[in-house]
Amino acid sequence: MEKKTILSGVQATGNLTLGNYLGALNNWVEMQEEYNCYYMIADLHTLTIRNDPETLRKNTLELIALYVAAGLDPEKNTIFVQSHVPAHTQLSWVLNCYTYMGELNRMTQFKDKASKHADNINSGLFTYPVLMAADILLYNADLVPVGEDQRQHLEITRDIAERFNSIYGETFKIPDAYIGKIGARIMGLQNPTAKMSKSAPDPMDKILLTDTADDIRKKFKKAVTDSENCVRYDRESKPGVSNLMGIYGIIKNKTMEEIEEEFKGQGYGNFKTAVAEAVVERLEPIQEKYNKLIENPDKIKEIYEKGDKKANEKANNLIKEVYEKIGLIK
Ligand code: ATP
Ligand code: LTN
Image (cartoon, rainbow, N blue to C red; front, side, top):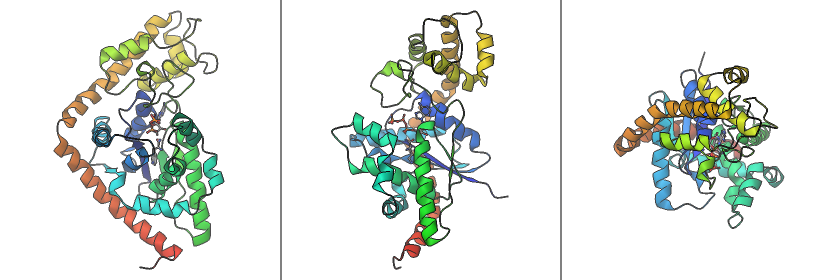
C-alpha cells in the first residue's frame, strides 16, 4: 500500500519553544518512518507580522537546523522553504476567491493576533488560513500534525477543499488534523492558562529549545503552581501543576496516574526538579546536533535545496490541474 502523505510547518518567528517541540516536532519525528512527509518553513506566513529582514533570514536557517537536530532525517523527509515553491502563493490567490469573509472572521487566531498587533492588522493576517490551506492541499496531504491551536485552520481548509471539489470535481484530498493527546497544548510556565508561545514577551514563561540547562532549571523552579502542594492532575483548578505533569508525561512516556503515584506525598520541589531534569536530558542531544549544524551553512543549504526541488515537482502538478479546471488557458 502506498504511504500516506503528511505536511506541516512552523513559522520562522524565532527560537522554537518546548510547546512547539512537544506539540508538533516531536510528533513529526515519530511519523517519519510510516509516512511520506513534507515539512516546510512557513516563511511567507511570518510576513503577517513585521520582521527585520536580517532576522527573518537568520530565523529561517536556524529553524531548518532545528528540524534536523530535533530528529527529522533529511533523507527521509522533504524539508523545504515555503517561499521557494511559488505554487503556494499561486494556489493561495485562487483559494482566496473560494473563501468567504465570514469564514475568516470566525478564526480565533486572527482575533488573537489582531489584538496583539493592533497597529498592523493587515489583510495577510486575515487571509493567513487560506495560504495555509494552499500549503496543505498542494501536496494532497492526508494528515496534518499540529497543536490544538491549529484545529480551526484545518477545518476551514477542509471546507475550502470540499467547496472547490463540489464545483470542479475531485481535485483536492480532504485532510485530517493529527493532534497528539497531551502535547497538544503546552501552557506558559508563568501563565498556565495561555499557551506557551514563542512570541510571548516574558522569557520566564517559555522554555526555548536553545536554553541552557541552568536556564531550564531556573524556569521550572519559578514555574507557577498552587498552594495545595500535591501532584494531582486537574487542568481546571490546577493548571500549572497539570501542565508540568503533561510535559513530564510526554517525555517520560507516563500517564497522569503514574505520575501522581510517583510523586505521592512529595511536595512540588522534587517534582519540579524531576520535570526540569527530564527536559534538560531530552534537549541536550538536540542542542548538540543543532550547534554543529548551525556552523555549517552549506550543509543547511544542501538540505533545503534538495527539499525545495522535490516540493516544487509535487506542487507544480497540482497547480497546473487547478488552473486548467478553473479555466485559465495554457
Ligand atoms: P507564535 O508565538 O509566533 O504565534 P507559536 O509558538 O504559536 O508562534 P507556530 O509557528 O504558530 O508557533 O506553531 C508551530 C507549531 O507548534 C504548530 O503546530 C502549533 O500548533 C504548535 N504549537 C505552538 N505552540 C504550542 C503549544 N504551546 N503547545 C502545543 N503545540 C504548540
Ligand atoms: N499556521 C501554522 C503554521 C503553518 C502550517 C501550515 C501548519 C503554516 N502552514 C501548513 C501546518 C500545515 C502554525 O503553526 N501557526
